[in-house]
Image (cartoon, rainbow, N blue to C red; front, side, top):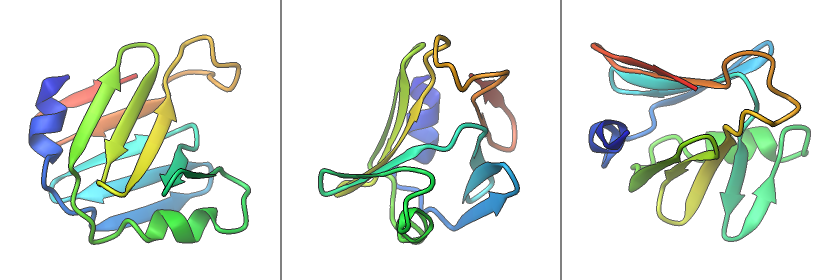
Length: 113
């Protein structure tokens, strides 16, 4: 999974797209699709889907550079922007999970959790 960190390190988030029941984060020729809404952490404050500021906080990431992507297998994906993070629970025991949780793609590869 180090490849994803290498691909996204220092990349700008260029768009946040809300689609009926999932979320897409777009980077240049790459992106994440989240089928379970990720958590946003800004200055140790947590924002979850349904919170009044959730959408705005996600959109605040547009134009920010990724500092690091960390993936703990069967546990979490964290996209770290330095002062803020987007976190996804990829634990297969999560009761929200029906099928895939998240997909990352670039122009050559696909990763599915």
